[in-house]
Length: 286
Image (cartoon, rainbow, N blue to C red; front, side):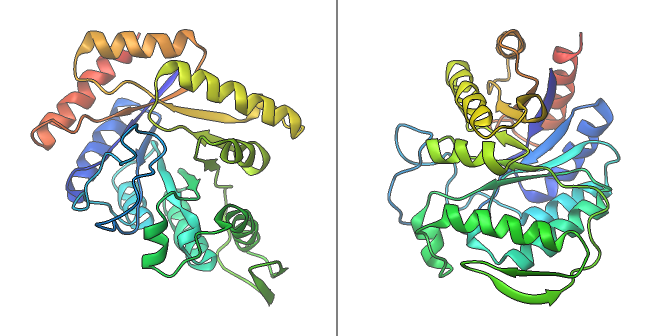
């Protein structure tokens, strides 16, 4: 089992020192979350908490994903860099392909592109993006972006995007894994159909096992090899050594290969966060 860390809710200038230390300590990946804007009033329909409200407030800092991952790539050498997950249908696929592709090249192939379709209608309305059929639009956006990342002359004639032959350079020298988010039936089916992996929501172990079973059924239905499909699940959020060790042991016993641990939000400063990362490294090293 490989362990990653998730950095969220801190001043964005604090991320680089954490990433540098996590890189030195051998963690598999560092993940950041993503939202474009936070409407002050919205329907409480966040799907992963009983309150219907997300864990962040409107003043929670969110960095631009591709600027941040490029920044972190400059201070690290081997750790993978993921966004979990990027709300793709809020954007233009050409702009995202250029920005994400640049981050992938600057990191020398270390980016994990988590993709979600979003849940907050008000965020879409704020930037004049269509909320309806955003899932199908995401499918086509990814198809367009993969063409652009080839670095070759390409054209496209789809439902939402049409263009004559053009070229985006440079192309990717290494493929960028597309790690789909979401845990609804359609999201799991989309992940199994077009994703290279899946990034899970915060949930208990039993729910993670259920999601894995559903993904394996969808992969089989799509005729895909489940051994080539990576599942990134969220581990327990804790500062106590025994709670972390016990939680991770249960995920390992359940056969999960990639577990993401949240740097606790209640740590007072960046020195304490880096200390927690160092302690986590000792806790997970055999």
